[in-house]
Length: 269
Image (cartoon, rainbow, N blue to C red):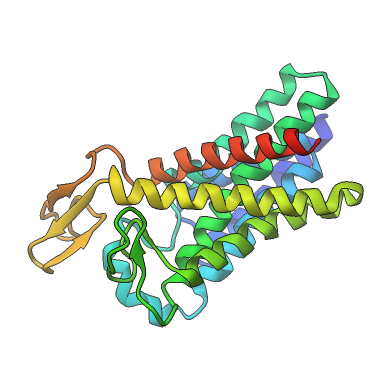
């Protein structure tokens, strides 16, 4: 067990530091990623650690894909592509809690269910990242998930066929990673990962369209997730709950994705 924690720390340190050097992580984000990776790998081993690595590598790579084209949309988001502490905890926090829960569980079936929930949590954050990074590149503008009216690219709660397909593939990528460690149940992991990730990503969009805090920048005459401009000027709250920022949306969505995936795994068993 101690060896797994040491390996988890060294592996997390190497990957997080590389992410920091590539500007995919802030300093605080790097430290948070090391802590998450150490405990997830130490608690669950390679099967758990691989999913976290897959999410970080794939999502970071997509953030650099056609970056110039997506730069004009950055003003809508509260944060940039460099993940800070809040973003790291929002994306991997539930996974960390599920991994720590392994210490209190001996029953094999329950541990399997915890892993299914973990697959769903990671599938959701990966699906949401893929939907965001690839969905904004679609030819057709998105529609608000609650009213179906056409909105600008990058609008919280906006969905499109292209983005939905990207979300499905993002969830499937995590399911496929789990399948590599469990060939006997490979098809099952692929299916529940894809569906659970998609469910979590759609819930993310629902929260974005309903209760996520959205502000209006008078200076830029645009909607934005930023409460305060770069120069310190506060923006006017347009809709949503002030405390419900994108980090909370991501975390709550990962809970839904985890629950859906675990339920599907149990039902299919």
